[in-house]
Length: 321
Image 1 (cartoon, helix red, strand yellow):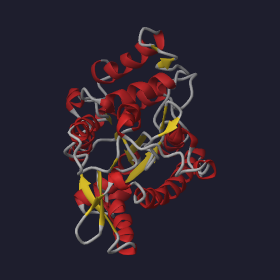
Image 2 (image 1 turned 180 degrees about the vertical axis):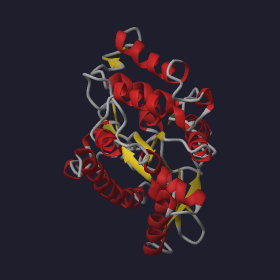
Image 3 (image 1 turned 180 degrees about the horizontal axis):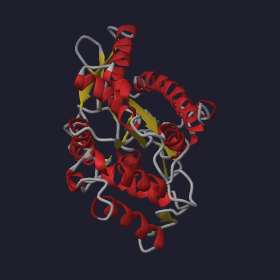
């Protein structure tokens, strides 16, 4: 078992712990009288806006059963297939500016916490330090604004690379290639692998590169794998050699090495996933939810077994980010 797989397992154990916090949030939200709508029957309704996944539904149903007749969580589904993070942000802001009573609890991307802080209830009194110490520090760090805890983490995404093991197994040196993939392959070696597989005609590397936050994630990962930061104090560091190298690689994957089709520049996650499947792509930059998305949309758990997971490549001389 590689170091990456061990980390990935630890990551999902952490998610399980954080999921428990969701129930805690709902309980504490029952204390916020001004945030709750009380119907004539006396049931307090909490309107919760998020991409409502099957896991959300399980937790919400359990909670509603436990507190039947007292508190009811009403989910407002904002699916990722219809709303990007930016679009969800704008929709929620419109609700909150209008002082709508149809949103009490909502999820936003971690980068938007400061943007929504003025509409939130400080949570420090409800989540004492011992409880906070059980949360992944990097996740909790994004939940503070001006030293106030204004959010709690629900889940923490991590960039992953999926690949078709059935296609790679046709290589005579598959075992060596798999070992490199599982142990943090460099971009330099990854590109050489792509040159070797060009003759197959399969798209080598698919990634979402539309003008949105998904492309920014790829850029920041490339930047930080060179031990560089985008933000230093109050400065945005775009005019650096590391930033130029990161952006140039994204361009070169399409135009110089021709390992990614030009159409990736119009892809968000869902379009990238669909193209990868329809055209028998070899590698895909995605998120932990890809396999679940695949099984829900393609209704084939057996076929999902052909996908292997590896960490994203990093620059030679740098570190995985």
